[in-house]
Image (cartoon, rainbow, N blue to C red):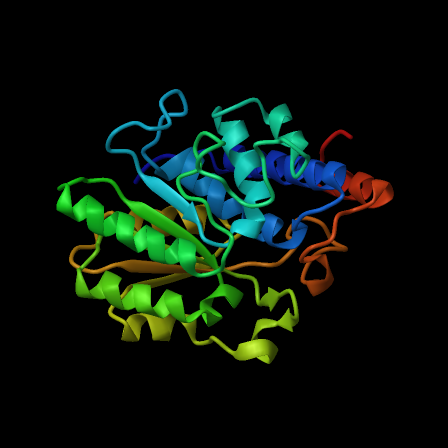
Length: 275
C-alpha cells in the first residue's frame, strides 16, 4: 500500500478552497458551491494519483483530466496553481477582461487545461473520445472525466457511457461530484438521477462509491482503478456543495453567487487561512 501524508493533501485542499473563493470574490462572479465540493477530488488526482509534469504540460503519455462541470473551474485553476503549472496569483484575474482565466476552462489559454468545457455533458463525451484515441495509440495513460450529479441529466452523458462500455475503455474513469444540488435546487426534485452507481453498472461500468471529502477514501478508490481491466470505471463521490464553509454548505443558493467582503473573510477564517 502506498504511503501517503493525508494531512498534507488536506492542507493543500484548504489552500485551493481559499484561492478559489478569493478569485470569485475579486471577480464578483463565479460558482463557489460546486468549486468547493469538487476540490478534494481534484487535489487527490493532481497531487497523488495522476501521471503529469507541470514543467511539461503537454508531456507524451500524461494522464488527462477533463472538468466536464466546467463552471467549477476556480477549483481547477487553484489546484493547477498549487501544483506548479503557473503562479497562483495569476488566477486572481478570473473572469476579468483579457484574462486567460475565463469563467469556464479554455484549453488554448491555460497550461494544464486539457479541454475547453462549459456546455454540460460535452466534456464527458470528449473524454471518452480521448480514451478511445489512447487505446488506438496503445497508451498506458488514463483519462479522468469529472462530472456533477446534476450534469448526469444530460443525454450525451449516457451516449458516451455506452461508447465507453462498448470499447472496453479501462483507461477511462468517470468521477461524479454527487453533491445533490444544482442551480434550481435539489437534483432529485429537478430530475432524479439516482441510483447513480446502479445506472452506470447497467451500462457496463465498474462502480465505486466513496466519501468525496475523505482523502483516504478518494486515494484508495483511485488506486483500485489501476487494477481494473476490460471496462470503464465510475467513482461516485458523496460530497457537499460549499464544503468547508458552514454558511455555504448544502445551500443551492451558493451555486453561482460570489461572496461579499464579510462573507469572504468569514469563509477564509473557517478554512484556517489569512485574508
